Image (tube, rainbow, N blue to C red; front, side, top):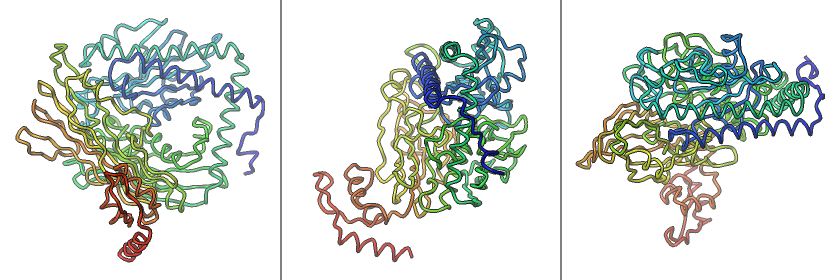
Amino acid sequence: MNEQQTLPQSREIDPILMAVLANRLNSIVREMANTLLKTARSAVLAVVRDFSCSIVTGDNRLLCPGEGLPVHIFGSSLQSQSMCDLHPDLAPGDAFLHNDPYLGNTHPGDHMVMVPVFVDGVHMFTACAKAHQADCGNSIPSTYHAYAKDIYEEGALIFPCVRIQKDYKDVGDIIRMCKRRIRVPEQWYGDYLAEIGSARIGERRLIELTRRYGIGTIKKFIDEWFAYSDRRMADAIRKMPKGKLSNTTIYDPLPPVLPEGLPIRVDISVDPDAGYIDVDLTHNADNKAFGLNESVACATSNAMCGVFNCMDPDVPHNAGSFSRVRVHLREGCITGVPKFPHSCSMATTNIGDRIVNVTQAAFAAIGDGHGLAEGSIGMGAGAGVISGIDWRRDGPFINQEWLVTNGGPGTPSTDGWLNYGLPVAAGLMYRGSVEVDESKYPILVKHLRVVPGGGGAGRFRGAPGSDLVYGPRRDPMTIVVSCDGQVNPPQGVRGGHAGPPAATFKLKRDGSAEKLPGVVEARIEPGEWIRGIDAGGGGYGSPLERDPARVCRDVLERWETLERARDVYGVVLTGSAERETLAVDARATATRRAELAKQSA
């Protein structure tokens, strides 16, 4: 097969016009996102930004993902395809609510609002706004239910792509269903209006754009933009060596369902000649009676995220470049196509994070300069879902906190990112504000601080996690924590060290600390506290190869400790950190590193 056959070479659009239109689409998605951010009511949206906006073509190809979370965005076209399949009578003024993981959605906690965009009678685009709900009607006060045996025990309201607006007016039946079953109905409705507003802004701007340039020009642009993206991805793959990679990570034990934990395996084939990467997730366990099964959207998105993390970041992310990555799934597999009625309550996180990590770390086996270490995976107490009664408003409250740090992975050329969050989100969620959370909810944060030495050591180290303590101000509070990485922390690659594990504690009134399991629903009384320690990211390369000046700076900035500088990095420092007079003793460092290298040989 020659290059002409594999890489479309059309040049019907002037390159300058193509750049203008591509950037105009990005600006539309940014306006959609700003609309949602500024008008949402729940803190998980208005502060944390756990939402994503995107534009899909009328024939269901992802055109513009903006700065959306990878786990949200890569599967947008699966949901718009369901909209088209189920509703052949699409019309201007329609809007659809979709959160069914068996029809292309991520998990029931993510509500997607889709608006088909018509220009002169032609369905040109679908404007998509997906937002993680503070509550979705689950049987427990959380949008995550790890122990749900099936979707019935999970309890979420499921909307398999239902029409929620017709002629630009709400379908009252659907609104009433949500308000009856969701614990904070008015907060949900405010978030729903934010999503609708976001999608309608996208609709308006896309109509304006198409009418300015004409349907014919926009269609030509779409074809050429996909062809260009396809060529860029194929060129990036051609720079890689041909070969097969395999990697395994282990999800933490989850008694009694996973008493020994769960191996997650990925097999990757790189074919630079044809310009394709195949990712095989079929060699994993069958679906299990819990809420951690991956949906098709999540399994595909997370595998692709792991691949794109290792590619040229300038390659556009859309259906054109995605076509060069083929993800293989198996029906009835925990990392594949879920069999109804298995629950996918936590499909966006936990096992999903493991898929991102195991995929990106697999590429490190190619050689130095390839792949990444594993990033932090613990969705611990800082990401717990809190609920209870707020005496200030004489009513219930519920929200997912996002005061986690979670250390990012070391890379071939950079240290890990401090405010990484989760692998599936790629650092695109905002860390929550202590002050905003304390004002919106009846909680008090005792401390939030970075853990010195809390990242995996390496030539480029993983970022440290943080240590957080908070609790209720007056009345009891329930917290649901779904934390992985307490037993099997993020691993380093190419000689890099693993990051320290996550941990969750309940601090009692008498000052004692009770270690909690990774997944727990706990009642916190006034005077008690919940403590969460994030996992740190894994390191890349041997810590004995790290620039000593970087180690010195890390100690000064309290990213690292003097003890780890000497005992892990082999760097001997003189002077005082408190007085900022630290300096590297070059001769003693060379001796110390030789000693450590001999010990590890």
